[in-house]
Amino acid sequence: MKYIKHIGVITLLACAIACKQQTADNSEKTAGPEKPLRIGMVTGLKPEKAAYYKELHANTWEGVLKKLKECNVRNYSIYLQEIEGNYYLFSYYEYTGDNYEADMKKIAADTTTQRWWTETDPCQIPLPQAAAEGKIWAGMEEVFHMD
Picture 1 (cartoon, rainbow, N blue to C red):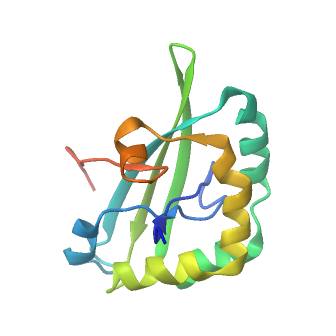
Picture 2 (cartoon, one colour):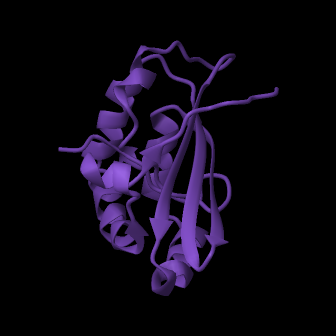
Picture 3 (tube, rainbow, N blue to C red):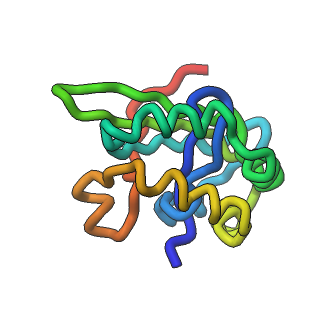
């Protein structure tokens, strides 16, 4: 089972984390409330599903949001951008817990989140590198950060 599968929010956790998809590299990094682990990811969005995806995230299920918070996900956003007729989603969140891999597994095991993914997954188009790994969202390298 893919255990870190990111799901989305248009603004501040308006959805559930794509919890099946971040790389194991992040589980080795130190995180906490004072020094969160910052995660950026990208995927495609089917143009005909854009309105539905926005609607889903404008009315995110409370159970999905609750599980994200319980699993130390904070400051979560998803952005939409059209580039040359293609739609892309960029997500960002911060992880403040002390066991990233375990928390992502808890999110992935949550039945409400799993039902949420049955709505969001068909809207998304994995980038080639993510698809090759059986994922929807591709992790991104952080090249700059300013507090």
